[in-house]
Length: 113
Length: 110
Image: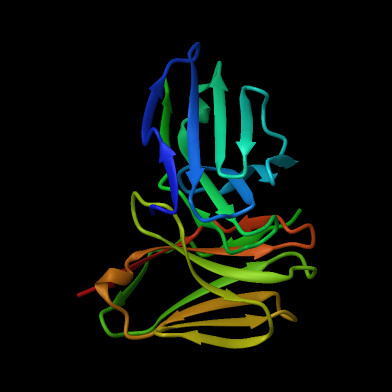
């Protein structure tokens, strides 16, 4: 779990708030990912970054805005979210884009009120 | 649409028995296949990867792949209470995006 860290672990925000999720990987990987996990649904890929360049935006609403300043850090900026956005947000990394061998952080449990 | 299907379970097995988990996928162009384990309240953890037809064994885990039938399975031998978790099947498509099934929940009864 210490290979990929995420903060905060829990977040409650109102629909008009702005917040950011942070992810950091200590594995020397080049690719980083944001996933959304809702109850009883498959993991949904949101964004993919390779060497800090975005390579995938999986039709994610603009109220989610990713940022990758370097290959070790990844942020997800949140604004004007909806209650249906409440979920577990997972960050992952891998040696290169497209590798199925991904290492996940502990996640941020987000509740939108 | 590319899909990964798993029985949601719960799959309940007695301690010491074999747990058998199945996964089917929709696209014949799939390149590689993975099993992740997710304990309640935790994040997914990679436990097995398989890239070619046949069996791959790692300790008490065996992954089986049949590309012609578009089927991948995971066997857990000598199941232990610590194996109680949700097991996620994941498939890499030609565009190298990883798609996950919804998971099968396994409960090992002591």
